[in-house]
Amino acid sequence: MDSNTQYAVENQERVRFGLIQDKFNKIGKKVNESVARFEKRNRVTTTTIILMLGVAISYYLIQFVLNLIPFIGWIFSSFIGIYSWLTFYTWTSIKGWGMSDSIKKFIVSKILPAIGCVGLFNFGPEITLGVVFTLLIVKSEDFIYNTTKGRMDKEVIKEGVAFFNLFRKI
Image 1: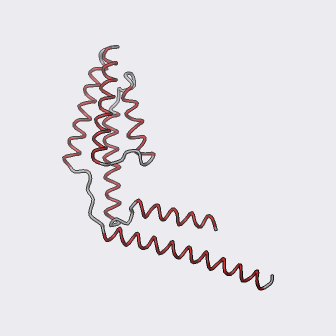
Image 2: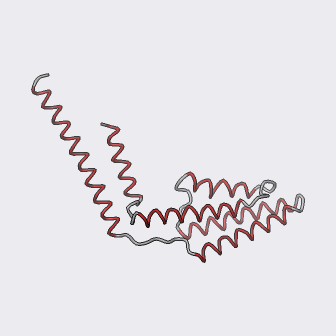
Image 3: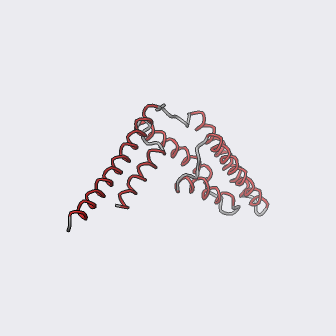
């Protein structure tokens, strides 16, 4: 290998190392910024838990009673299922919980309520289960956020993913 080729290879390695170091510095800045603006997060209060579970159980009991009536009850039960889904969709949207961010949230917010909207299949407490899972997901996100003191922001995670994707290109 001649000296020009060797110099070009070494120069490329320095550039790659510089890019990696720059990305590392950006991630460090983002982490420090997120720590500086950290506020303890508690999006689910005891009052919210009691109200959401109370409403979900009420919808379930109404559906249970309507399912005992053949045909007409099944149709009305479907309407109750649709109305309950709209209620909790609006409630979580107002709270800003964004229930379609991940696959587990998608299943809880879309699949379980879809089962509850079909008259013959809504014999179980799928609405109540959906509410319980939603509350658990949001509480666990808040716990992770609070224990890491805000270092697990979406921006930092995106920057970290981009950083590791840089390694794939190398």
